[in-house]
Image: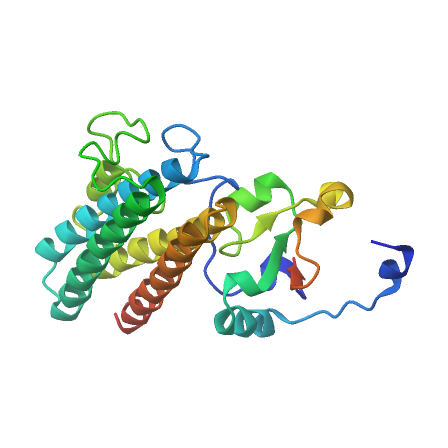
Amino acid sequence: MEGGINAWKGLVAKGIPDAGMAYFEPAKKTGELIALAWYLEEGSRKFYAEMARREKDPEAVGLLNELVDDEERHKTSLFQLQQTLSGRKSDPAFPGSLIGIKPGVEYLEGGMLLSEALEWVRGKEVREVLDLSVSLEVNAVDLYIKMERKVQEKEARQVFQILSNQEKIHLERLSSLLEKR
Amino acid sequence: MGVVDYFKPVSTWPAEKVREFLDQHSPQEYNLVDVRTPQEYEKGHLPGARLIPVAELETRWKELDPNKLTIAY
């Protein structure tokens, strides 16, 4: 690419190559990656839900609520994928049975702590909330592309591909709204 | 990789063309490689880019699918 990264005007992801896969313990097995993705989706869902409750801008609230629904669907897809791969119809302890996390510590898809994100947005304008959301989503796209590369199972690759494509759509929608604000 | 491969022409794309290509293709269709240092990669990289620093290319090029277009920066 001519000019290298300095010529790039688009969004960039941040973090080390395995960022996002090493938040709790280095997640290596497919089941661990699925559980990790589930936790990150849940963290993002909570963040968007809180932002939707707090914001007044109708268009932003509408989009944030759609993101909440999407992240919930992503969690369902990940749960179903784990069921398919494990051959077990139910695992009441999922996702904690697959990966260890500290109680009460929640992360967003971009790797940021949920508590830190909620603290950061306090008193901020909708534009800044959207800006943070864009950076979360660009890291989510980065993460799912990498997860897709790491897994061998066809079903898992498909799910991670779908997730990275959907996070890309989130990114485009958030960026589009941000440009208008 | 044979010696002939060293003489294959490599085109340089402007960033805008790269962006259009990435927008129109799924990540499974190309190799996107960041050849800078890990520290530079950590500060900001194109989403989905693999980190293979220049110094490691000689030993790690096999990680890339030769049947796909490779974009490096």
